[in-house]
Length: 147
Image (cartoon, rainbow, N blue to C red; front, side):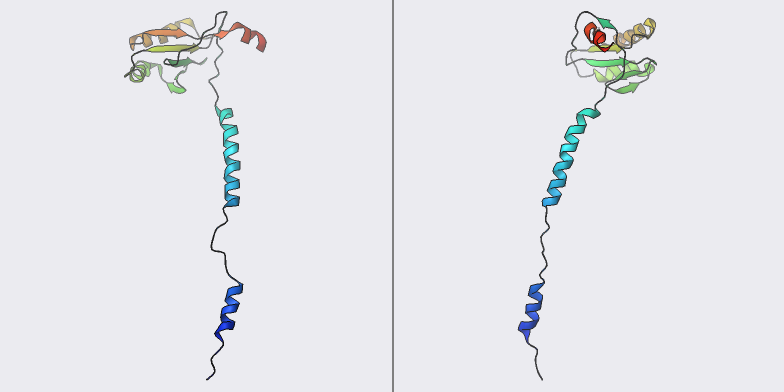
């Protein structure tokens, strides 16, 4: 009985060794490219609500602690980009200002909305306990440059 040479069997296995580690360099490259793409496109995705504000010569800058209430041309009401029914506006404002000491609303309304509707929205805000209602306008020079 002849035994085969073990050294020749082992030498054939040693030549074709497999790599047991994953090369992560291409993965990191792809992740960095995706990160750059998201960093560039995220600011472009933030869009505001299209409201045609009236113009005024004085400049107004809303304070940081107020809530922005937007009334669009079709009389839809939005609080911080969330659409609210006018019948639920009072309860929604009460919930928003529940734990706040200052209750300030900045009303941003399209200039072509009937005055009576704006007064109704302001009245509802006052019923909800809002202390101050500020009306937002657009500076005149910005409007003049757009034309």
